[in-house]
Length: 416
Image (cartoon, rainbow, N blue to C red):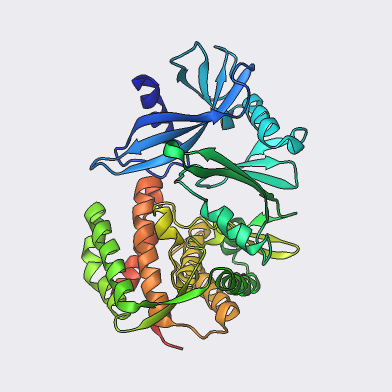
């Protein structure tokens, strides 16, 4: 693999939604083929490749590239360059309909004759639509071993308002281990993205409380199923407070806009000291975009956790209140669709959605100290994420940071 092709891939990764290291000064330092899905001598050869991404300071990540090779000048997708061992054009296979069809026919022939498409929403993976019944999720940021999403969906058996897994795409990781590279799962019939529904309601000033309440009930059911499938443990509030404090320190080092609020945020975390907390497997990155609404009710999707964390960190048990805080923060994000996001009408909409969601989740029996700490922790993460991926959105979590630091979020801190 030539240095010029490495550079071309890096420039391309900086433009795609599923790459989480945008703007961090990363470089592609190696690309290793994982094997062909089609015959390499076919008119279109499709294979998976493992890109090593290296950041300043030496940290590395691995991304799954679904690559197709075409005769020069015949590709209709995004051409990265020329293969070093042939005259073939190297293409992101998910951008080329011919390559996409060849990949699906080779790995899931039962879907060879259905209409294919690529989901255009905000996703940290690539979703290929397989007609109206199934989705092919191509994982992008990968590590050795099972993907968390497949692990959870298999454990839950496709029940409790989550889609089921019908195929796992696995590949050989270097040094003899394997990794999940993708999966096929049921497509929820007549479903609409929860973010789309909520933002439309907020923009129009329409009541969202019934939906928010039902979403709280759905999360409660999923949490109960996760605890049954994976068990529960007890954890130290001191350890959690210290962990959140370390994440804050690391965030301030990368985003000095957080510095004026650091002491007040740390106070929120210190309220957990001396407690013993119930922890379990959780969703880990819960927000409106991880939900689907259909005539059958709410479906919760994407159990991979926060993309910036390692698989071990995302697999670790945590408090249920992390997921609750994630959805509360998502209601705050939905205010961005309102003509006056910081005005009283948008604020009242978000507060009403929050209260209804909490009532559905726990009947209003809120652990205010935990919820407040997790909301602060989530908003800190959001500031870093937006700086790297959507700088125009950074004021949304900063608005929450300012409110939390000022102590004016009284509905966050009361113990009920």
